[in-house]
Image (cartoon, rainbow, N blue to C red; front, side, top):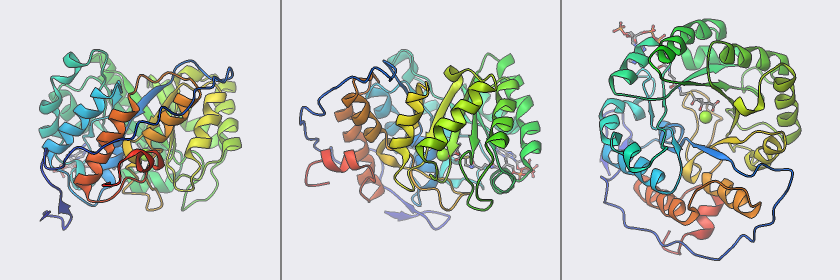
Length: 339
Ligand code: HMG
Ligand code: MG
């Protein structure tokens, strides 16, 4: 490791870490649950939500290899990076260098989508200049987090996103809308369901094709998840346009995901190896680990298209680069003793 400009350490270059071994147990034994969808689309956020919160600065070639490896596991939506202000998220300040390294992947993996986060028109300009084909804006259901994460009120942030979404659509680029702090806020406490629905509908109405309901600090529980999704669908939001984004701070992410699937949601955000957090919400730990999600969905007979062994090997490889074990229970259980 070497010292990086902001005091974080720089991890090794691509190829520096050897390949981990992954156990093949022939498990879990699939037992179908008829209340669940046949297929779930995983929106992989490890390269963005995961790496944005790492103390280590990951070299751009390691990031490019990480995204390529994620695509090779069968994941078809791999969030690549963010075009935010580089001072706000130095870990992703290399977005311009990363994008050209990913340019060949969609031809190699048909159907692969590589969305990027953009907070404003400046971010959109940067993303379009680097041929992004999908973007995501990120709003907050609470005032405090809007101020901390976007330096403006929640409504001012919405006003900032509207031209982004409209200009992206005019360029043929769909926008996803994230909404943070949907289930509770570390500064404001409980967040009224109606307040969350009001902000979420605003994102859909401005033209976001999908709304990802964020449990930024991992405080949701399954009944709350059902209540929020029901409130959205009763307010006219089609369940097909909803996604869920659970951080796993209190160990509830998988239970919350199952609740969301039972409510009709079929798009789930997850992060390879459980990497992640949010630099502007101290209590946000990693996202739901993609491997833990795939293990559960394999057991429930729900299709994801993801090769769990390849994904586990990828997270083991990244854990070696980062110099710490993956927080994913499934990764830890399936990796050989050397990891
Ligand atoms: P600001 O300081 O208010 O920006 O930051 P501004 O509009 O006043 O502009 C100030 C300067 O920044 C200007 O430069 C702009 O050009 C420049 P100057 O004229 O002074 O030379 N600037 C930019 N430069 C590069 N790229 C840009 C950009 N925008 C302005 N995009 C801003 C406002 C939104 C930019 C800032 O607050 C920011 O970048 N925030 C991002 C924070 C972030 O990325 N957080 C993590 C992602 S959200 C998350 O993780 C939650 C999620 O996972 C869901 C969940 O878990 O809940 C999605
Ligand atoms: Mg997040």
